[in-house]
Structure formats: structure tokens, C-alpha cells
Length: 465
Image (cartoon, rainbow, N blue to C red; front, side, top):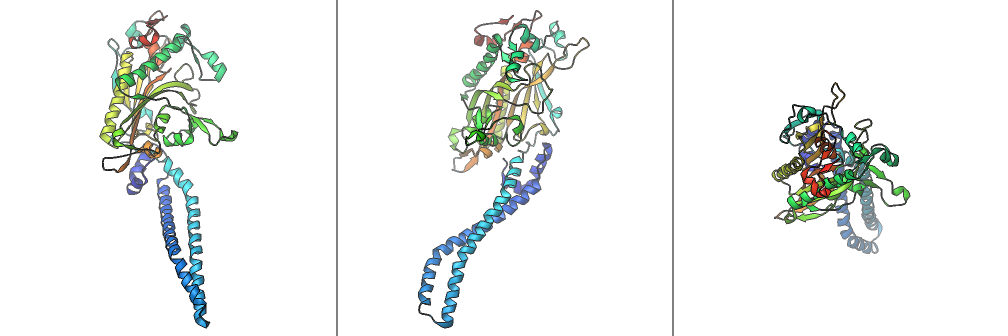
């Protein structure tokens, strides 16, 4: 949620933000509704103040006039009675005016609030402009010793790679047919060492966040009220991606939604709270099951583990004071966290600076990290994939957008209240991350070397197959 005061003072900044994010929000209409609402509120407050003043003065004044009228005659009596009638009419007129204002505000507020909730967080000034993901800018790449991005997998390793779906089937690490039988397309069953590898990456990531980075692990709900989804900026935009549990139609007081990221629960913990400065920064992480409908992705990445409806993710959030430099420093550490983990798995990757058109509603800046997946990409003349990058991580700065919606504030050393700044990052998402792990560490005979960092979480198993 954007600051309406800032919108009034600098509407062009928000017009540019809407345009840069390739969105459509009628800023002029919002400003007009906001001005009308404020004008009516002012009129209502004036009427209430007058109502309160009259309420204090009217009783004694009416008492005095009614005492005088008993002893008055003729024109004097008629004049006093007229004054009494006028005084008695004024409270009713003010009550009617206040009610009219309430009615007019009630007719304006739904559209006013709807437009307000649609206005995106403007991109940071140094985010490159672009229309979508094709305009994202590569920052840098990393690869383990001996890997050359200029060569194919076969050129680097001396044999053609199997895809992760072939490896999963070969080693009985997943069962897609039975997953689809139970839950439909884009579902799966992880089996045996596939499930152990999945759990290993999650446990490794949680331990890294807690033991190395000093974050507090939290277990949070993955079924939340609508207010939590709105507060974290996933509604109204993105509503079609969430699974909706219609509890209200079954007699419950409110509907519920399955979350697509642990960020929702982590940020919702302190909604409507005022923290002290010494409580900041909040450093939380969680591992949670995530659910996404993948609406609009029909026919895209339907095979394998890349685009699925249910997965598990280790997520981190930081809530810090409203300071751009501090927010950027945390963002850099989040990216460094991802790089450290991917390097410990010996997975080649690249960092992408997301352009304005790929930021989404709530982000002012976002870095995507894409891992190299030999089984993706275009096919060569022999029908083998040539490899391609696939997104596995994303780290975002949100300014005060999310905290403003959640009403999450803190008091500074002078006792002044501010909305906090928020950041979030995918520490690991599995089973998608299993794709580069399996494909990059496959051997010519089809066996898979388990990355050394994960072996303690696999009971010491060093090779699959």
C-alpha cells in the first residue's frame, strides 16, 4: 500500500511507477475520489463539532427560554417560541447532515480503497526500465572449477546428459503417474532417496539460516485469512494464483487461502503492532509447504518438477527500520546467502536484475537467481537438450509497502512512529532445486553424486545409483 500523502504531493511519481511496471491504475480517478472523500470528511467533522458544541450549550439555553416564555405575552411570547423552535431544529439538521456525509463517504470508499490497493510500489530509481522478464539484466555468473558456459554439458563432461525426469525414473526418486492419479496434473510423489534428498536441502537451508546467519526459525500457518494475503500484497493482484477455501459457505466466519510462500505467515506475525527500535531488525525464516494454482501457465513446463502446484520452501524475511541503506545492505546479504548455498552444491548460476516490468506490485527492487539446468532449453540436432537457466531463487526489497498494508510500525528513539521496511528471499525451494542438483551431478552411467554439503543430511550417502 502506498502513502496517500506522498501520492497527493507527487502524483507523477506514482503515474511513472504504474507505467514502468506495465500496469493499469487510474491515478487521476483515485486523486479525485480522495479529494472528494477528504472534503466530505471535513464537512462531517465540522458538523460533529457544531453538534457537540450545541449539545453542551442547548440545554441551559432552552431551559432559560422556556422559563421566560411562561411569563411572556403577545409578540414577545411568539418571538421566544420561534427561537425555541429554531434551537430545537438545529440538532436534527446537523444529525441529518452527518448522516448524509456518512452515506456519501460510504458510496465513495469502495472504489477509492479498491484503486488505492491497486497502486503498485514504484520501482527504485536505479532499477532498469523494461516491459518484462526478457528485459532483465544479467549481473554476473558463477560456475564451479572446470565448467565452461561456452560449452554444452557434453562438451564439459564428455557425455550427453539425461534430463531430471529420466534420472528420477531411473532411480525411482519420484512417481508422477501416481501423483497425478491422486491429485491431477502437476502433482507428484517423491519416493525413497528422492524424498530424502528433498528433505536434505530443506534441513541444510534451515540450519544455514539459523546457525550461520542467525535467523530465528518460525513455524507459521500456511492456511490464512484474506486479510493476511491482502496485507502482504498478494491480493488483489495474484488472487487467481491462490487456492481458496470457502469456509463462509459452510458456516464459518471467514474464508481461508493456502499460501504460496512462507513470507505471508512470517510477515503476518506482527501485523497491527508497534515495535520498539531495539526489536529491529526482525530476522525470521521458515520452512513451509507452498501452494500455487499456476493459473495461466497451461502447457508450460508440464513435465517434471519445474512448475508444480505444491512444493516446500525455506523463506527468509527481514523487517528493519525505514532506511534505504540498511534495506540495501540486507538485500545484498540475502543474495550472498543464496550464492553461498548454490556454490556449496557446485551448481552454476547467474544473477539477474529484474527490470521495472518484472517487479510485480509490491517490490521496489528484485534480483532473480537462475540455476543452470542441462535438461532444459532448445534441442540440438540429435534431439538432446542444450541446457538453459531456470529460476530457483528471488530476493526482493519492498520499502514500506507491505508493512503499511499490515500496519506494522516501530517507534524511533524520539518516540515517533514509522512504518518499517521489509525484505524477503527464497533460501531454497524444493523440489525445483533438485533439477540442477540431479542434472549437474549425474555421471556417465546415470548415477548421481550427492553434493558434499548434503551428505550429512542423507545419512552419509554419497552417490545415488
